[in-house]
Length: 203
Image (cartoon, rainbow, N blue to C red; front, side, top):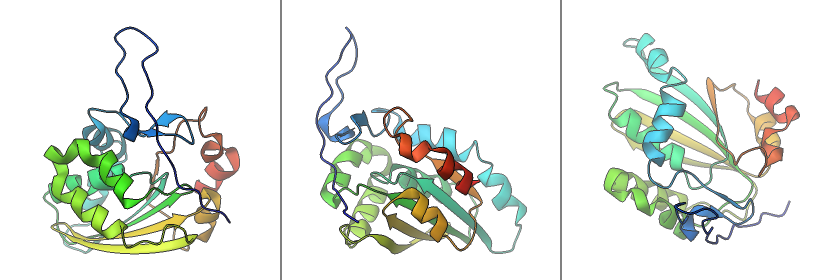
């Protein structure tokens, strides 16, 4: 399988008053921005974490070691992973073991990742540095699983990143995920990530 890296360009406003999208936030392959320019971290917490009941599951575990398995379609620049670590670092629960299974068909370089996430340094600068440094060790031209393990105040986070097609990743999972973050580009821009066969496999 051929892995193609993504280039970016600038999207210009089409209507008066519309914001100019910075070039580093635009995925050239899908002609779409990666995420909201201003509130991407808080947006992720509100939509994906508060909406999936993560805290209820972790709190119900009591004093036992708390394990949580997450699946994500569309790793991109790691925005959701950054937001998740920040969320869990400040949740007040410890001894959590998070397994984060994500997929990316068009991986970006660590330099591009740093540029894309750079606008959120005030909020999560140390986490950006941590992820970029760990991600730089991944051989993004090699398809298949790549694993990174990070120690955080909340516990241990294991990132399993599948370089390749999403359906292949879902079929390669040996243990079901507790929740899924469907964070690929929208159906009009990236219909493959929203196709029926994949969504049925996710369940």
